[in-house]
Image 1 (tube, rainbow, N blue to C red):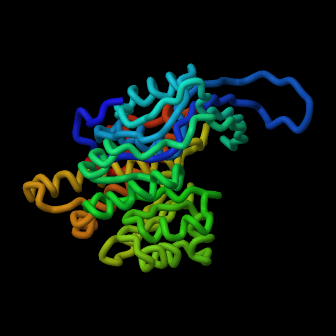
Image 2: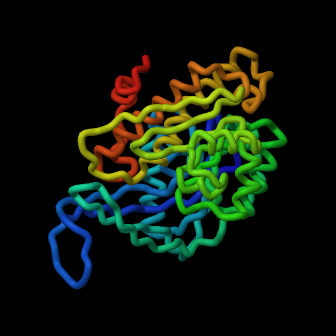
Image 3: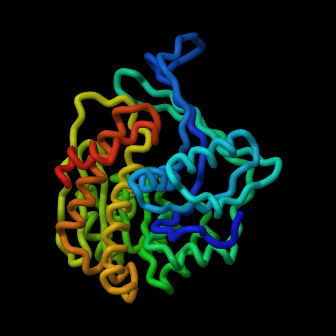
Length: 332
């Protein structure tokens, strides 16, 4: 691993990287049986990892911080990151460790999933001083609660230098330790389940408002095929309508790609504002003065990417082209 990135990084992510094996079946087994696999594929996985792969696909520079094994799976994970232009210089590799894997059964008729996973035996990643350079020079630090000791150190660095902290609050991921992490993040976009547990309300518009009032500059709640809700930095509410598809092949990575697409668009806006100000404005200050048109465009783009991603098997393999996503979102 090098000690300094060879390029300017727009988004740095901290999370778990996995290999996902997808198998499409007619039905989920309820007991001992044999049935043919209708189709299958292998894809890189992990919420933050897939968000970075999405952003990388759409032209934003990204870097992943994690620790994996030196096995065949680990080598595949690194290769897949490179396919999506994700910088892997900050990924630590443990000798003789097993990397994380998941086997995902997908029901052909509905896209429903049953997930079986094997955790990585690699140690928790250590904070390296070289990470400070990645974080201080980036526009956005993207987290989801994994690798918490390292993550907390990274958040302190981001807060001190004005890098935007983005939190992916996924379903079934909320616990009491996440409360201060959520309150300390600048961009908080969470799933319905997370929002309800964190705010105590089932009204998603109210949940957005509460998340914003508790400290998030930009608050969002995603509700799958029902669309998403936002409160922008100036307190203005916005509902992003969904882009329904006639059928769903696989919903894996839909939420992760939503985050990646939204952050890709946001990072582009932030970098443009910094360029216009000769680098004198910090990313977090740029976020506070983003106009509604730019933020709404980011939300529509994310919604379009997420919807189109359900049309393919795998969390990343189904990502649409930039042009296709722009067309669906009504953007130029």
